[in-house]
Amino acid sequence: MTGGPDATEAVPVGITTGSPAGAPVTLLIADDDEVTRSGLRTLLAAQPGITVLGEAADGVEAVEQARRLRPDVVLMDVRMPRRNGIEATRQLLAESAAPPRIVVITTFENDGYVTAALSAGASGFVLKRLPVRQIAEAVRVVAAGEAVLFPAALRRMVAARPLEATEALPTAALTGREEEVLRLMATGRSNPEIAQSLTVSLETVKTHVGNVLTKLGAQNRTHAVVIAYESGLVVPGWGG
Image (cartoon, rainbow, N blue to C red; front, side, top):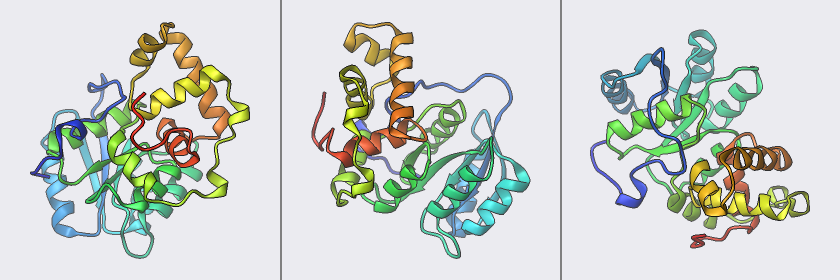
């Protein structure tokens, strides 16, 4: 939470940044390390626009606390006892019509657990070594309905995992333009940047993004990007 990654990976990319207007974002922190959990709570509670409702020491407690406190966002570690963050994420997203947004927090970006959590429906991930203001911004952005992507780190994670048949991209279901949009999403570009690149309107891009999510059965933008890399539609090192 004090050090910093390379500049190209230090800021969430491919999102509309800025705190949402209105009430503070409510947050639940789930991490099995008490020092990490306590530090995150203290630091994030001091950030503008964030209210920390509680903590959880494992995946079972994370689900129970989320049910009770109904936070906007859960900051979810993946390697926890009793129930890991992947299963906790999957359960929270499956059992409610209006589940919290999940942000995975991890020490290493080349952790296969993170990719699995993103595939389970998490809206993005942050690294524990990031400055707290960037973790706070990721929480605010996800609460506003956007995704948090670090494209270079995501490329490395996916490249380290074998392709599973169930994760293959149904390319026949996507139009040529939808594939273009998905490729640009995978590089971390925002909707306005995609619109500029393709010389189309922002509303057209939003329509294409919605179609891509529906056709891929992706729970969110981040999940669609994971599918794009794991299917081979986008390969590590591809820059658009």
